Image 1 (cartoon, one colour):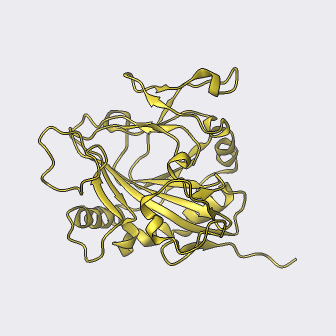
Image 2: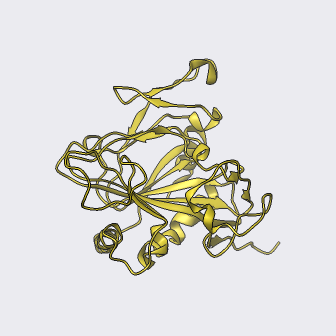
Length: 276
C-alpha cells in the first residue's frame, strides 16, 4: 500500500494525496527513453494522441514554432509502449487506487497521458476538473495516479490542488493571472476554503487525485524538464454514457448504458476476495 491509513483519510477529505516511490532510477530512464521514441513518432505502435496541448490539434513534432509554449500530451502511450503498460499494472499503484475507489473489485484503464513541460518553453496546464472533460463516462468515481519522471517542483511546474474541491460538484474554472483558480463564488458551498496549494513530487514517486479535484500546473521556467505520466483508472462498474465526443471514443465497442470494457480498456486489477 502506497498510502498510510492517515493518508487514505486525507485523500477522502482533501481529494488528493502523495504516495511513496514506485520507480527506481533504471526504470525511470527506460520510461524516459520510451517516451522520447513515441513523442518523435519512432515507435512501432502509435498512441491515440501525440500533440502540443497548447498548439491546437496538430501532431507534435520539431516543427513547433520557436518561442511557442509547449505542453506535450501523449494519450494512451500504453498502446505504444509495453513499459508504460506495465507501469499501469503496477500492483502497488492499482491496490492503492482500489482502496481509494471504495475497495473496487476491478479496475480498468480509462486512458493515460504524458504531460511534458520542456525546459524554458513548457507552458501551463490551466485549472480544471478531469471528469467534465470525460463526457462519455458515469459515475464520477475515477482516480488518477500521477507518476513523476522528473522532480516536479514549484519552479518547473508541479501540480497545484484545491483541497476538498472534489466534494463541490462540477464547477467551471478559469485560470487567473497569478495562477489561482477563478470561478463563480455562488457555485461552491458557503464557507469553504478555495486556496490552492502546490504538490511537489520527486521523480519516481506517485501522487493520487480524484477526478473532480480542482488542479492545474504552471509553466516550467527552469532549465530542467518536467515529465510526468498520469494513469486514469475507472472502477469496473463505470458505464458508457456519451454526451459529447472524446478522443478514445473510437475504441468503444459497447452500447450506451453498458459497462465500458474491451481490449482498449484493459483490466489491470482484480481484487481477490477472501473466503467467508
